[in-house]
Length: 612
Image 1 (cartoon, rainbow, N blue to C red):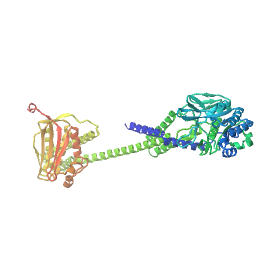
Image 2 (cartoon, one colour):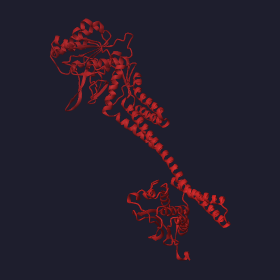
Image 3 (spheres, helix red, strand yellow):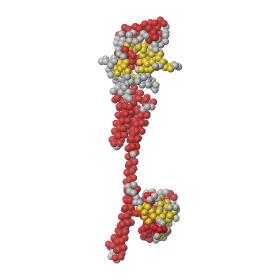
């Protein structure tokens, strides 16, 4: 049962941590960790000089001011493309939507420039209208003059506006578009796109972009120093640096760019720069992969199991040191895996590790405390039982010792010697019965033995107890009265235990009664129950004492005032014996007027034939 409860707690901690890993707070923290790891982890070199393959030709504020602003965007693009022809780049990708017709003359010159540019990629984007979402493509005259059209629908995290991935594939209105950067990469490599459910391949590059509800998301690896950028206004002076490059042309001016994003380095960049960084990710093949949900789930489960095993197998400082190692592993694992290009979730597994360690440590702590309390209770009970046994054995041992000393010291008549020998023999047997009774009561309390189930005569038990108690009563001049006969009924159970219970009630009545009083013992059948009562004329008890009289080691006021030595165990044992016989104890008492202890037991009334 304990192992099942412990496993249930670990499972609950695992489930709680896993669910916490799916919350918006957890997603945000995972993103922050991704940004931090991006800043701390260097990218592999693309070539011996580590020079980027992508270059941005920026239509910045300076260019717009010098060329007449955004209303002159098409002449600016025309001039830029005409200058790029001399550079002979691998591919040219425009990040300016050309879906609306402009000035016919400007459109004509732009169309001519587009047709003259080799390996040119134009953009398209998703547009939401009342009729649904559809693609906004370039004008047909422009579209027909290019190599390919790719979408510029960059993905971004809606929680904090940071661009961490782009979708390489999008579908709208039954039409699929590859991303602008993927089309540019395909053209630059002179290869086609081969797709599977889990990835895409372009030439020798295998791109981990599994198909999902968000298309085919690809995690970006931003260059810390950024992509080389040349203002379009100064392109002619640096045209030679573009030879063999992948050129991305777009608006970067803050006053005109429609898409301003933030990268994990905290840099505010334009959409065209995001595409250039994505191209660099493809060119360097430095892809980040996400583990499957099952893998993340399994690793979190391993942390939970490790925490559970640590606190189950170890104890003390060793358990806490090992638990700390589990926590450290949960926090270090994402860092180590990131260096292996695996973006592992941070919050969920860490939460599972923390909750599992806390749950396991708390359970073991409270379980250990419970075991300690149980051990202390067992020790205390053992000591109390020994105390009780010593107290109860004192009377027969005193009698045996006194009788033996008299026989040794004095010359006695044969009759007196015989009487003392019988007394020693009787008390020795009583001592043996007392020890056996003590052992039986302890075993019954622990559930280690079954009570005897045999019929015995109630009157015989009562008469034996009265005979044994009379010498004690005569010393105080107390008279014991047997008010009613009990020979007409019998009980099923253990006669020796019942004898102990009756004798204890009788001796208590004698001990706590003043001299020259009466003690009455009565047995009667009432509604099928035997009511065996012992009534004295002692000082009595109040209602507060009556509630605690059967508690182990509770000593009543009458015991303290009478000066009688006692352990407070006897009545608790009496109650146990009566309970094991299927009965109950009733007590009535009033200060100054005595007490009455009654055993209520299920009796078997004997028929007249059996009595005769």
